Length: 120
Image 1 (tube, rainbow, N blue to C red):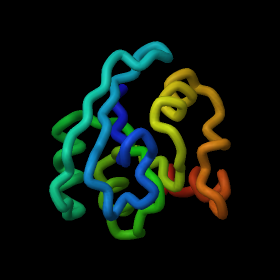
Image 2: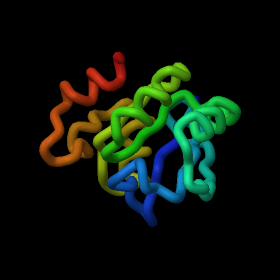
Image 3: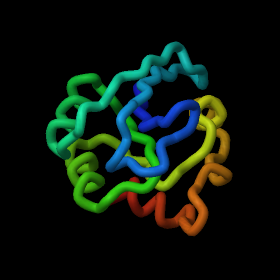
Image 4: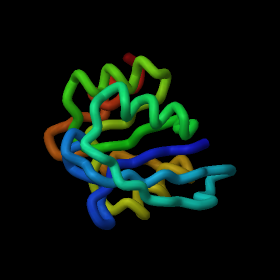
């Protein structure tokens, strides 16, 4: 599985819409096999979604995201896990080993909201 995560330094970028860097990680059997970072030029919804599809990304993980880009990403079939924050490596470790990510949910956001985003 390949996941993409908008990042700012060693943290999940707090706002997707202004993110400039994306980390792409390959996960297999509960382990992160490799990761790389890519610069995101000022992204426009469909262009970014196309790039994610071309790179065979299964899941996009990000902080706060506006409704329109979230809809575009979800229309491609890519799973979206929004409204999370924290240290990138700690999140990847928890996510890749199927541990709870509840501690990474942004303040004021509920787990139910995140599940609804993934299912729509």
